[in-house]
Length: 622
Image (cartoon, rainbow, N blue to C red):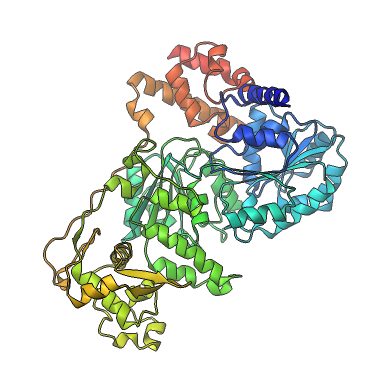
């Protein structure tokens, strides 16, 4: 048995190199593949960019029958089929984007056994026509792969009811092994996936959720449009996505950035299907650099060279946030994720809770997101802990400058925060310890929200006394008081209480030192000890290009331009020809023969034969 497993692993390794041009499997890829090939139902949770597609594509080339891949988006299917075809793999997609003649021809290829992988949507899979096609094939269905499998769970952030019906297809093809793949899944979501897909005692593989190439950052939202423009100037020439909460916000920000001369397009459900498809296509093909979008954009986007993701507004959950920032740096090169945070965003999100199936569940997910946005410790550790993963950065894996904004800025020195701390704790007591952080801060800032007026809390002595600080700064004070043990959260609704340490500090008017960075105004009647926030440490980007010699930079641009021309001629994204990592290795290694070309990342035998002579000519002429 062991010998057979070794032989299978060797076959997988050969396919990986010959077809896809990769020297070795990453992480748990091979373990997942061997599990699938053994006929065992398998659930694999891997971060975006972790190589999930290889986990079904390699087995598909070894299975005797067809691999059916259930994928949520037409654009993703098209990308995957283009990439597989470029590598010499017979793959098709069956969806509404095909003309009738194209559809019939693809079905005939499938029925004749000329196709190894077929992509379908969950909606299309359930049609009588599709089921008839699958049952009429000359060769059997060997594997049913469910991509973006978190969509099967109503605890997942992209729940799709049609995914619940996939189990009926599984029952029609009981001999087909099932592989479920997703980038984000808490324990609850994992249980839902296994149950709702009818997986039989599946093998479960959970890779690290740590995307070490993505720099994590949260900035207080102040004059957001200006902040966005400044960030884009810092990342000039990079491809990126900006997520907004609403269609209106997308349109306004797009208009502002377009007028400022940025290469940008909008994307949201209010645009026509044709406009959305056109805008997405231009972005994927690197003809537009920046997409301003609602969360309607992005699931399954296979573009590997997205260098940054910006959240203009707070996401509704950590899973949604993680899925969206995962669209940056799929090629493993340095990338960034920026969240602009304002406590007011939470109120916008809560406004829609009444429409949610479970407001309590929605509030729980939002609270976890708020914890991440307001944490004063390593953001990477906070993010990974949500998924049950422990992260302690000793600097051996990631330097502080590459980890997150908190680590890059270094430890925050303690400063005299006595007055705002006294104000906050006094307000908690005046409210009889019945409310959470957001409500306390609203009272301190003198909010005239209906619930505050109805409760007569505008009549409290602490109402409006905190206008010397901004809302984000009050959140910093609150988190610091929690960490130092002056206050605590209690119950399901995180109601604040003042602990004995806080009561003593108030009674004795003790000096309170907290590690916070706030712009303390004179209205607080404080000493002039204000510390300025450290300037942001710009995360390294474009390091390869910056360090190139003039000759290598010229070669880099020549190959990049050739790639763009080839992509335009074939009407595919440039990364289908090859990705940026391959481009960099071509410049570094400068292969002179086709055999040497095979030692470049991402170039297999078929691709070397297809593009080798052209690439080698460019290298020789340079």
